[in-house]
Length: 378
Ligand code: SAM
Image 1 (cartoon, rainbow, N blue to C red):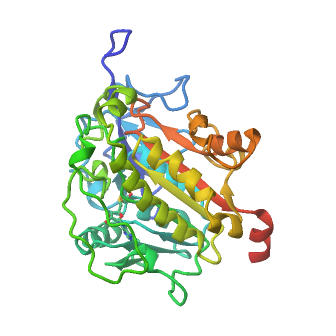
Image 2: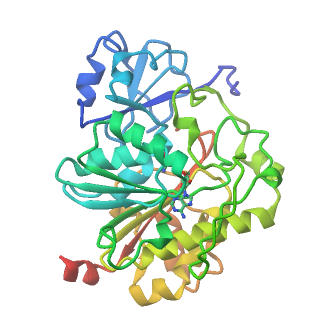
């Protein structure tokens, strides 16, 4: 309940799979044609007092709209046929930020269950290619089902039981120019995990190129392996969560976060070494700085970043430029750069709080290589 006494809701976000139909076709379909469009709201995204039979298109986020969470969309024909995908608006940010051109080759480095994979497929279209990498065999099966249902078989190639960090020279995905990285994280931004306790979670294996031994068995805990808030029957919509500050206070296990951050950093650093890569997004559904700005600082400070010319894309250059919540400047104090550059990097990052009505807390940043390099590759 807000200070004005209104009960607030997190909307149910829906992405239209443009490989099957357009946003307007979806809104004019029997499932949604009775809904009226909400307009005249002052805030770009704010949508928490939405009435039952309204929909709202998400400005800045093409092909995405929201409805009241009480509607049963899972039994609709549109959902069953893969024409609409239940995906929070926050989770749609990485593919939009990566902005691969039609026909591009993209690697989705940590892909299952595949929400971002099918989004990428819709963006690159039938002339493009998406390599969807998933280390976990069982989760790769879900990924295959999801990409199949979305009609992306000709675009997406699932690399099942493949560790992203083992992709190297000679691999068909090695020449990709665009990469989307959404590795396992603490999931502290997920709405239904308000009482989540990081000390009880199991850790993902930290990629170790020297070790060829079997991977450690991992128990499915509260660790966000699958953005399951985006699967059918999820709790994406519902009552607003408590404040982010409250969650941070609850989860004080720094050591645990550091181990997750080490794993996430290894994923980013491996992506930096793809020879033709020019744009890489890194995202988490965590609100912890260690997994977000902390990973960005460490990645930019690496030798690979320096020798290969990786930096953070400036806010102005990105489709998400109008979004108001950016990276936390203080978290970049250890970055070896002047104040101006630190500010530029912080502004290049996008943050979503759990109370922003986009379906949960989220972080995304786009790394780019310098323009000279990009021109040479063209
Ligand atoms: N991007 C997905 C989506 O939007 O549906 C969610 C990805 S989930 C947060 C992280 C996934 O990365 C998990 O399925 C996990 O098994 C996988 N993963 C973790 N480490 C990996 C690695 N080294 N290589 C490939 N996949 C990995």
